[in-house]
Image (cartoon, rainbow, N blue to C red; front, side, top):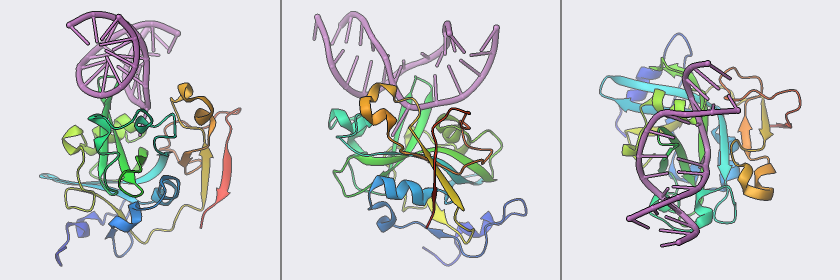
Length: 216
DNA sequence: TCTTCGATGAGA
DNA sequence: CTCATCGAAGAT
């Protein structure tokens, strides 16, 4: 944490970060996944690369509530893959899905809780030219791979931050995507997104179930 | 060791 | 709707 933070370079005409930009600290992540998930909407994901910073504003996430949640990878216990998800909060849980796509989660709650939030879509802010809608494309555009498995998000490579942009006026919830196998857990409204935002990966259809709620 | 299949995305 | 593509998990 030096005085000349690279965060100053985030200020752009296209989507200016307003005033002070501050890295989210450990305490932010050390809360229940569902709380962290909602609080992550509107925050920034930042990756420092040799050729500059890439940053996007989070507009869609999903909460995974631990071993009791049949849709969560930690529901099958502690394995090599889920080691990071069972680890301390504020670290990245990243996995390869369908042999070709990476998905990035932020680990939440106390160490051992096995809870995390999947980042599903970003609104481009800086250094992003590919699509950032959908968990696989988000990682590809941000340059996130399993090399970042377990990385400390309170460090200076890959981190999340808050700025002075207003929080989303509204947050919508829906069932999580692609977890139909999870029994009653498949229906729980644990996907949160900014309703109507163009970067959201799957805009709700007419019959899609949606719960709009007020944000803090 | 063998088999199955997934917290996806692209394309017909 | 299909299918690419591979590691983790469960079955054997």
